[in-house]
Length: 363
Image (cartoon, rainbow, N blue to C red; front, side, top):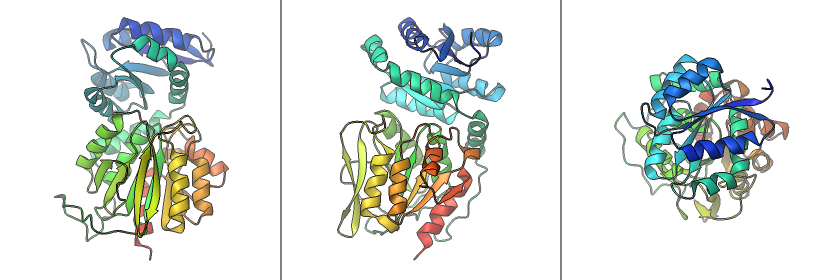
């Protein structure tokens, strides 16, 4: 067993999944599969012998469910966890609970044609596992603790609604908008940012790398937690103050100018930077239609999606912000943006809501 290889433990009650994932990962010279076990009880015994760098975890299993195991794992020894979830609404809801508890990424699996699906997605699975191994779980634990305790304090707009959520005034428009891009660790980071914002904010458009079906559940979850209205974007939706639009998984989202209004376009197309939705696609459209009236924010995630688009936004006069390394679960996307000179200001996660509010207050 090489010390330089990523050590992976697979926990899934499906024998087919264990077999296929083991075969897929074993083919990569940079990965060692420590074992493949049917439930968390077996996993605990195996981990007492050899602790993995990454755990591939199913969320629906007998004896102990994946979320309970994940919470115990994060309390004892935070370790990067990639959730293996079915492409169903129930699977999406359960997976979001797991990600709120500290999982860093998700691999989807259909109920039918499982073996062929996993084999065809072998490259993405390997890339996800290796990316998860780069995760700094100290930062994930800190963000998770903030979300669970509700201890984060942010200055609220005195004109914002009280604790009771008020209807959003959809007839008002604004020349300002905020575009956010994020990936690994982003679900938790976005929750920190959006739940810290008052109801009256610029229109916000977001690309979070997430599979199809999961973004609707994610938006619904945030809508119940935030003062702003949070929706999975539909083609033609208006970008409005107090509204957050999240790009649907498996579709690109762009912003266009429609007279004095901004609207989103949701469409199909090839992946960009291996992603669909792509942060670069969103950022480039915002640079073209909004320029200096926009702010771009790039947050935790692996890879370089969004770096070039953010540079284009900065060149067009937009304000640009990067999440700093000290608070990123994976300092990949922001780091690439910094290298390109795309980031005007680099700040900790907890400072991003304040920057957005100050941007909104500028005349």
